[in-house]
Length: 339
Ligand code: FAD
Ligand code: EPU
Image: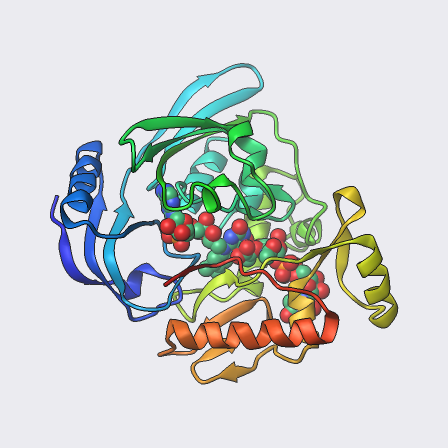
């Protein structure tokens, strides 16, 4: 495996930022991975794994080793009457894997259609959309621990999955490379259509019989109509998480802003639509230099052309300040900031 130098990451981050990695390795096998570990030790350099680059914001050139995950393969491990257990390698494209599941009539992940990125990154923030989270079908994952050089298995209870969260985004951040993820998929589908006008879309498309394929098509259509395509305008999806607040704080906000968009979650807490807060604070469609707020979805920050990571962070900080000032709510960043 060749380790490249001063490698452009422009096409490898969906913000489309013009940054370079000092070193770059495309890891396509276990041998490559071990070579990479040796390189890190010999050069005493920092390193990070990169999947599809759809949830990262580089503030500078990266002065270490970028490890691109090229581990491929999908394998059926076992099945019974109701379920099928499938292992996908971390370098597989997430939506390619979802498409494979739908084609093989394996249900569960169809609501997560068209989310960019890799299978290996899917547990990091427990990706979610349209009423489903990755954790709902997660069995276990295998990861390479950089310090010990061992491959370990993490089962569901080890992973501390939460809303856009897991142990891999916290205690284990940067400590492991996720090699594969194993999912439990349903032979008899349980359709999840209550969220985000999926049913409406299916009716509009003239589809008479509900199927996982129809749900996939509807989700793809809705996503394309709302979210900017990174091929056209650089972005990393939602820049912030939807904030969770207490019942008390919610009631006082509701009094001041009767139209506030939210839904109740466990423990009586409320999840607010951050897009609505940012929109109300007047940011939708605005720009600051080359960084901007998307015109259709205020939760998505965009690169209008030659933005730098620092320009995007400046915009994010100003948005955080105005939402805090107007609503008293702290926004938490979803995107991984790489300094
Ligand atoms: P990267 O951006 O490459 O990496 C993200 C982080 O994970 C980095 O810190 C990286 O070091 C680490 N990492 C990556 N792979 C590994 C690995 N194998 N082992 C260890 N660490 C690793 N997310 C949602 O949850 N729901 C959505 O609906 C959604 N919609 C989006 C829409 C758009 C248009 C875009 C651009 C993004 C969207 N996202 C969404 C965010 C993004 O798609 C997900 O977070 C995705 O899982 C990131 O995958 P990636 O391979 O691109 O990760
Ligand atoms: N809204 C506005 N103005 C805006 C944007 C949104 O008023 O500019 C309001 C609308 O009322 C809308 C509500 O906010 O009904 C929610 O918006 P939307 O349905 O677009 O979803 P979201 O909460 O903004 C979340 C996820 C997305 C995921 C969708 C669908 C987070 C941080 N974001 O967005 O995930 O695709 O729901 O499930 O939870 C991502 O994580 O990168 C991502 C795109």
